[in-house]
Image (cartoon, rainbow, N blue to C red; front, side, top):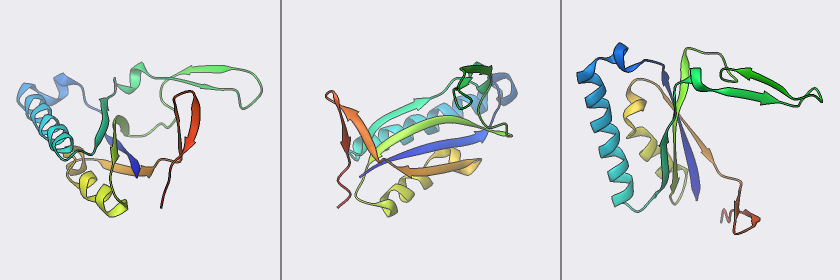
Length: 127
């Protein structure tokens, strides 16, 4: 079953972190991605640009509204996503707990509902 791990953590620049902490964070995420890959559960992993690079749009009012910044204004940012394919929620929680960002932020674990592949929407088989 596919799960997306949404990595939320305090937003800090490379300058805020300092070179040693930045290098350690990169090593930790590299090891985490390689562990997921070696286990055969990693479908994708992506680190996002800072929230200052975010553009949020809506047409909820009927008109297109475009604004700079993230949808949710909070101390934590959505810093990255990891998509995994594992047997169940317990396995997803176990992998989420190993995320380096779980030590200083939050990992939201959300099962996939449908996906668009080969030209059509496909519902996951959640046996």
